[in-house]
Image (cartoon, rainbow, N blue to C red):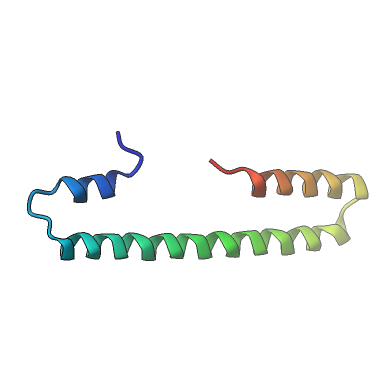
Length: 77
């Protein structure tokens, strides 16, 4: 399977025109931008949650949470 199945399918469409391909690409770009915004929101929420947990937990537990959160943010496919 291709890493980009939707792009590949659009490319292989025998009836594809430059216009239909551009429509597909614009849709994918909008979806990518929305996903990136969602990721930013999740990171921001995680940072706020970590700050909130700072007040209600011990220093050692806070460090464990902070380290786990930092690893999760840096984990990229």
